[in-house]
Length: 254
Image (cartoon, rainbow, N blue to C red; front, side, top):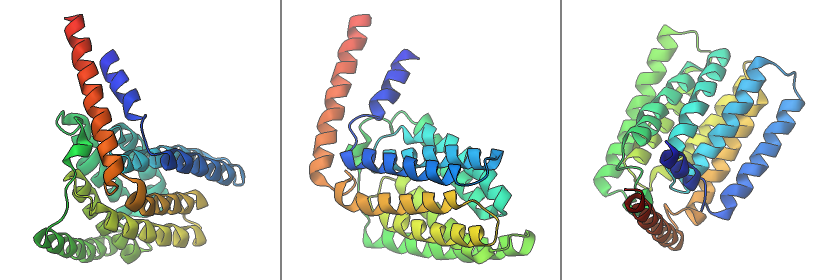
């Protein structure tokens, strides 16, 4: 257990500096949003979820597998928020993240070993599959949620869900092209939660959270190891050194 806790602590280190700046900026925005609204169980839950959620997407940006635990905990909070707003596909979106991102990361030893060295790019075929899959999920999910629930924004909800679901799968498969979907997802979620806020179904914190996600997604194209070759090389070297140190420590304790 101590080795695993040490591993998780290591996963919070070595991020690009911009990631830490964005987290504290987000934290400040969320605190201001929290104190400027009535303090309720829902607003507290949303605050916890948005804080952990930002840490999660920043961990993904930095190609660090600690996003598993962060994503799982934030998903629980966001499911509660989505249910309160009747944005049912946003709840399904969080469950999809748990299945495609959080649980595989937590259960797969292979994922957690120097993940940054396993980044790859789309081919023409994978571009086609990803785009068509997003469109199909949009129409199917929008129809189903609009037909069988009282979701007041089924097609807006479906846009966010279809893009985010596809992005989660692309991320799990370690394609850096995920960030084209994450940018689109951030915009779609901003629209969804702004409409929800205007209609009195959600707090402003979710809109703020989506805008932070969008900033992170745009930032990924410049500073993240998913795209920045220099940053990728630095992290590969750092992870290799960490693995060597852990191997030496295991031998010494044997």
